[in-house]
Image (cartoon, rainbow, N blue to C red; front, side):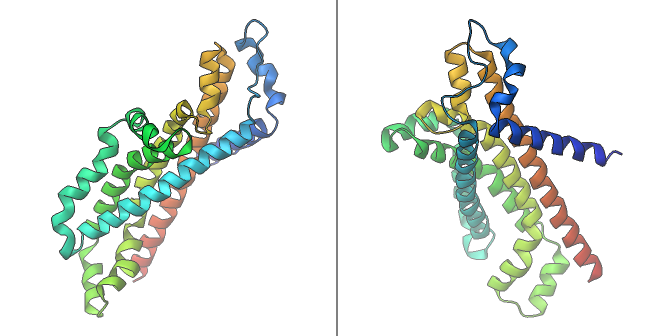
Length: 251
């Protein structure tokens, strides 16, 4: 029962989210009490499905870029020839946490203009630190017996990295990616302040028009996506960890 109930809740949330994005007008009656002076209960200036898809695409692009750079830096500083770059790499990864996304947007807009580009830069920088730190932890806490066995069979450095180190560190790296994605899903809403096509558009429109229904709609969609993505990545992470544990036990 303990396993079935959370799964059932996730499926219900997913079904409701899909239904709301496809046919939002069907839920108008639920949000009508939150409106006043004849306001529309459902945001219609842009299709909610289009906004949600654009929101996720922006987060996905920024996360992929953050992952490539952060994991690349972690690999570099865990090689003998790159250990001296650890302080510099950590400082670079900390940039996104030092400057809040709003500040990054303020700096990026004059350089890149309004639209998606400044939002991508802000999310990219903000996502570096958790992925870098987790990748660094994963690559520096490998079981000694496994690494020694890899050396013993004559693997080259590249072979050890691709066939042993990265696969073993993958669950920890994925945990960092999970954290980065969930934070980015929420943070991406501010992209609409610089004309990015995100669900922040619904929230901002609700605030400007004093329409609580729109604010709640945007917030609920973002929250539901964040929870579902978190659960999905957590499941993948556990699956990988169990596979690695099973292979080590079998060996």
